[in-house]
Image 1 (cartoon, rainbow, N blue to C red):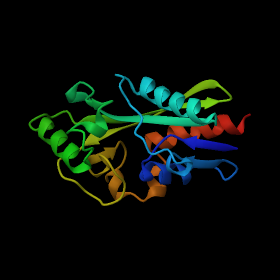
Image 2 (image 1 turned 90 degrees about the horizontal axis):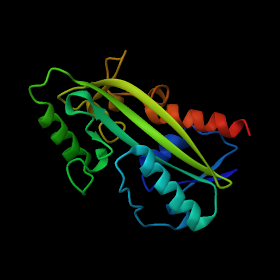
Image 3 (image 1 turned 30 degrees about the horizontal axis):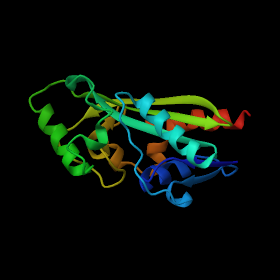
Length: 191
């Protein structure tokens, strides 16, 4: 089965390709020569994931899925949330986003946070949703060189190292995205 993953993010694509089964041909937006950014104007991960999937499905008439992921920090009332990638501005700089997050958490004892991914799948013109969550906490100092986004400052519950200190295989055993993708793959395998 051929599926378009509605992303330009090479890190997300690599992560999902390492999880998804070989009977599914996963292609990115770059593979179908779609180089535009898809607007994410909504206030929820669910709405943004659906909007991206609909945009690509309507354009190419190929089964596809899109995700939207956010880091939700308790002490910041769920921020950065849906704005995670653009938290420090439109440049989408991981370093600047982390810097802003650490600054806003300065002096706050509650460091509880969660990563949440919502996947919207459009398959034969029907819409499906899958969600994955991993709980953890934010630390003040970046650790590790793997991963991307907020991985260097996020330690999942039950562990003593950040996502960025884990191998991709370790992270994929417990990450929010892998949890959502596993639900997606289980659904596709059940068809």
